[in-house]
Image 1 (cartoon, rainbow, N blue to C red):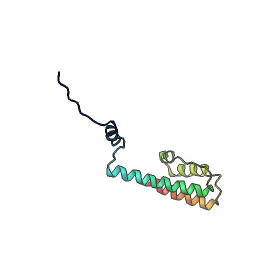
Image 2: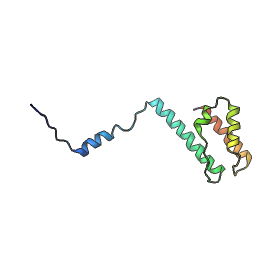
Image 3: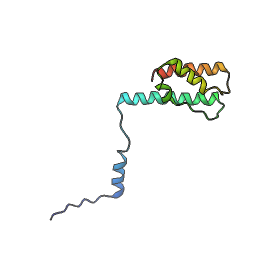
Image 4: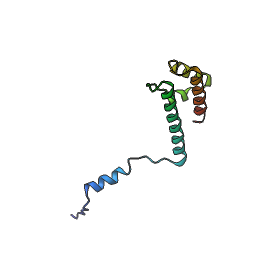
Amino acid sequence: MLHVNFKTDKEEISERKKKYLTAKYGQHQMSLIKKRLRVEMWMYEQLQNLYDNNEIEIDLDELLDMEDSNQRKEWLKLKLIEAKRPQNEVELFIGELLEKANIL
């Protein structure tokens, strides 16, 4: 019986396997991911400002799942009821977030 032995370094095999752990996205998909990430980062910064760096989270997916913009607006108002900033700043944030949500 014939055998072929290839001498490979285990570290080399491990390095080759690591290369395939990251998924590859098409240009359009990557563009959508970046757009969403920009909105999420903007939203995070704005929430930090509205709450003076206290923890608050808004689930962007939950917001996007709502079909009616009035429903989205009311949901956001309830979520942001304890904001530390004046109401006009909260309203401005809600308006901008709803605008950004429409492009996602």
